Length: 607
Image (cartoon, rainbow, N blue to C red):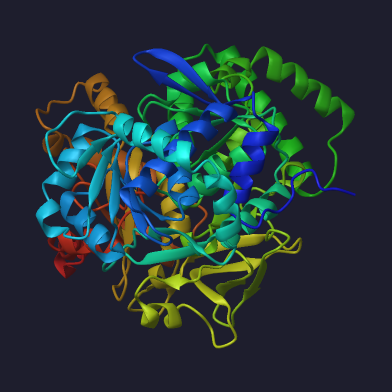
């Protein structure tokens, strides 16, 4: 029996087959000058072949590295496919990186060509061009005009490509013949929390096997609409929201920006989306705030709906069915009470897959109980990236699902999660030592994550191996579960738990300033700056109560004993967050060492 979605040998083959099979179907929708535009699979194919032809005309040869630094758009996607069809290797670069960080990646990857999303990215590249002698051309995707011998507009590249194709019409056939499954497809530089980033080498087979394994679990097809807002530079969005969606003929709507996601959800009306917990944490905080303003009866109905939904979700996790009465009541409550919440995410969302960071259990339980299904998954850039994901019909909240059918997982003696399979990277580019360090002697990839397999074979992540805090009293403390609980509070935007080799656990907390400022105004408190606000006695008393309530279920040695409220958020620009919005622990701990040390002064603790 022929499989619905076969495993392709290469991304090139997948692209070729999808653009033939879904020729007249819409591949991409996006907004341009305020208007929604669309491109069919056939239009995408034609543009990609022109980009590939243009690159061939410029002189690209097989395995040449080509960087893309741009925000999400169909042009990002088509540039990637164009590079691949031309035999090149795509080097993804986050558009939020500084010129210095970009320079390091471009030099290390030895990129010959660069795609810049707009004038801002082009000017960033031009500012470091003198230090990039191997770069031959910069192609500007929004056709920004600039007089420079190394800058080419996308229009000019397409025109050159058209000329190349007229005398080389067999470009796709040649690509299908010459590109093999073991060939390098992409270099993705990890945004590690310490040291210089490492270039993860992923092959065509790495990605196609991950698409294949994911499709064995996720119930998606050509009728689905994906909303793409996570950076395409990130391996999660690249595989799931770019390659996988294209392979099944689904439509992708490109969000205008992270800030516009709320509006784009209403326009795109997605059925599927890939996301990170932070999006739903923000939605949760807003919903809870709104519910608190409802009349008492309406509040009771809302929480009755959520609690009824919880019973159904719990039964599902146990692989059982809820009673008929509970199911009928929940169905009615969904229509009467929860419909507005569903409308906020477009009204058609079947499920969202969350990755990149752990989902706080409270958030996962809330949305799944509300009928907005969030399937938590797990992976690393080095694993292309998906290792596991929760199945739609057997979603176990608090886990990241069972391993994909073509991926093997085992737990080492020290609790570290080890992985092997066809999705495992080739290694780190020009870094054999780091490659050796990350593999066991028998070929398993060391993830650096600590976890267990539950009774159903689902993975439960407890923390990063290197993040485990050992107090001076010898107690092992995993900060991640504590941080997850704290950040679920409507009062907390970001948190970093510290305490390694210290007597007790403490935390740096960034307040959710919108909620805090509103509360302070209602209390009639006086402040001019956020620094003054976070230093008010009343503010700190509020956060003492929030922390105490949030950490009720933790052991005494795990609880946060001291904290400091920060007057601004941790940001990418300040080097405190990775491009995927994870806090760089060592950077933050070093930058705020004085504040942390002050919390541990003996007289301060005894006071």
